[in-house]
Image 1: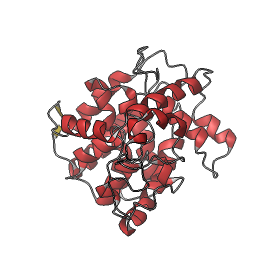
Image 2 (image 1 turned 90 degrees about the vertical axis):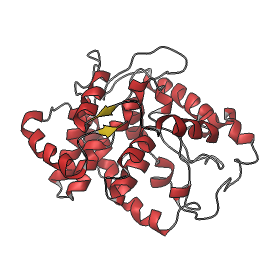
Image 3 (image 1 turned 30 degrees about the vertical axis):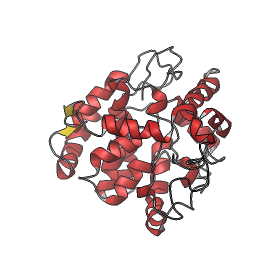
Image 4 (image 1 turned 45 degrees about the horizontal axis):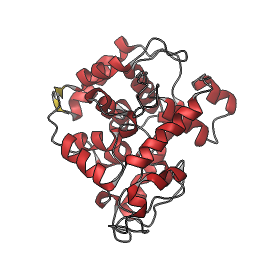
Length: 292
């Protein structure tokens, strides 16, 4: 949650949640009525659609196979900062902008809304923890990364970009679209090679997945890694790269998605009363200090 005000041409989204609000419009939950969806987030901003389009122009132009490899080399050394999970969330809270006209929730409150909805429905504690964690990778913004390299729908790089990815026309400016190594159906991959062998566009999902890999169950890691992979878990555009394990694990990704999109509401969770439960839950799965 929150805004980063930056008018530079490389960071067109004023609000880091413009992408997430746009998702609700593009991928409505058929079980949630229009009235209910409006109650989750009253966002009236005539510039938002154009802002999101400009965001994806940059995202689709620059998210190449080589770019992803470069970012992996830079950030997967985990030498930017050492923090506990709670320090990381406090760090993220610096993204909040009081001028946001729609909802006055910091990152912890949004994450608690998600995790509390999951807990209320009786899911396993690792699933509840995943709700608390899922956006922590957005600390990339605070390490100087532009938003198009932090948020946004994710997709495979190294093979042909699917027309089911949002704004597919913007891939015409991506050099991989004309590179014979990368512009075929399978590109550098083989049929049903499994997503673990596929490089995804760079962002907060992949970054947090790599940080959490030693600590969480595989189902939680799939949720973190692929919760923004809408062209697959909503459009089934990349079945040709998935193996049987991916197909089974994506049931958890699909189960998580409504909690992420439809639990945003301007009702602040009682952080003080909830935090002891989450402190114990975090302690169960994670070390005291994480390397970012």
